Length: 276
Image: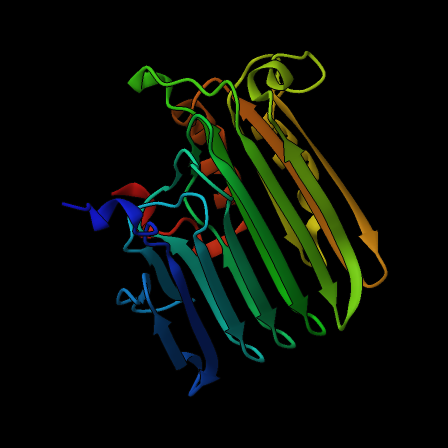
């Protein structure tokens, strides 16, 4: 008897979700929500402050061939905090790579805090992420991405994998921040270099775009300490603060990442789900 199941192609994730927020009657309001496939968005009740949205990948992780797209539009004078239900896991890729794209826009005078929980990369994973943001006049954005290459507490290690992360941030169409981070296939060898992390496996990038970003430089440096760095400057009409952190594991990383987010996110602080 022929085993037809052996000839079937593995099912892949192809999902997208879109969220739009408006400023109405003195507070941020949901104006549009679209969900397709494994991409879901939930909106916890928040009495005041920014609208809070939680992104969920119901597939439980990503592997080669998966495609996931998030789109967030924060309207004029609106404010939103976007996070994830849990850490995103990128598993071993048998073929191809997992791809995630994030399209963010913030209208004039609006504010967006993009605060997903950590991405956990497993051995032999292949992953690519593109993050594109366009800000209007006076708009502010706090963008955080943290990555952990294996979970030491679980006895996991990542020797070989492919990881790509591309950011493009614009104000009114003008490029004000660009970076491309790439590591692999020899992840362990690269991280072991003193000029990279000296063997630490948890890393984070934190970017704040707002007029007074440079004024928070010294306070941010006091939090980050020697295991990372912080710089601040102005690009055109935009103030910018950029921090990079590294640590031995995600728990140790969070001990500095959490207070840094609280410093840079003002009264909005940390998403509630981060403390669950």
